[in-house]
Amino acid sequence: MTQPHSATTPASAPRRALIGWRLLALLYDMMPVIALWLLVGAAFAVGYLLAGHPPRENIRPFSVLQWSAWLCCWLVTGAYAVLSWRRGGQTLGMRPWRLHVSAVDHRQAGIGALCARYAIGTVSLLAGGLGFWWAWLDRDRLTLHDRLSKTRMHRLNKQG
View 1 (cartoon, rainbow, N blue to C red):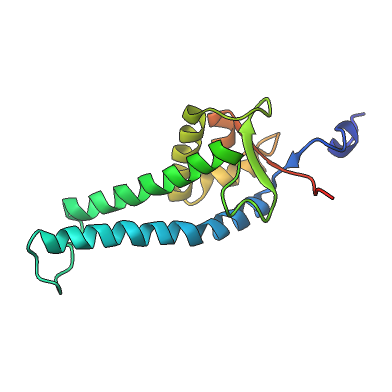
View 2: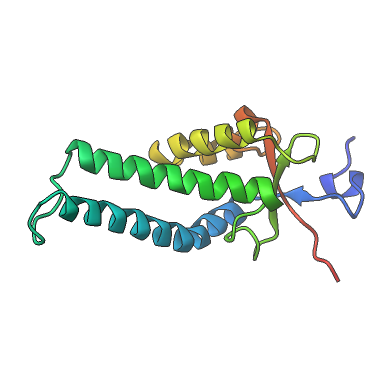
């Protein structure tokens, strides 16, 4: 008979990051992400005005310029996430919940793996969160972006 997960791991070992903690971190991370999107949107609006368009005219929906703005928002969000994960293993939204991203062997994950994690996570969210739902079916409770990018998210133990 196998023992429970907590009995077989040392007290100092990080715990699994359950889906609820991950979703709370995503919610917290929306604050800095929205701020970044506002900066990108302002840059596009200024560029639009400097190109000679009237001040009360919006960028046309589904135009190349609008798609470019969304692509820049996605890239800026990815830079925020990947650089945060690479620098300290955490984004701002992950800190209150003590979540940490690392490679499978608990070392710092590489840029390529972190970029793959972000890209797969994006597709997962766009597909109604299917990659997160995957965690309830996975034998190790890993999300699809954990498994495919060969990275792991852990919940760190309290210090002090």
